[in-house]
Length: 128
Image: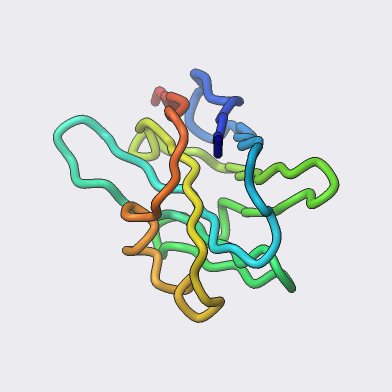
């Protein structure tokens, strides 16, 4: 059974950093689109970062570009999201997601919210 398990969320002040982790099990890790999306109360889900887990290609939403970094550790079957210079508007539940899509599909961050496998989410709260 495929499972994605996120961790690393928490509460920080504006300007702080957090690193989210997503461990994948029961899944062929390579050659997949993976990514992170978030949902804040009363707002639509937003794809924030994506990656193709073959040769690594990464993509970012404009709202996080230059502040967030998505990366992978193939040996550990783990996806990361390093979040720096956090802002109160980054407050949301963050979800890891994965799907068996071609590399070009990973660039469309709007598709992350519809990936066929996702975790339970980890809460990120940024105070001003």
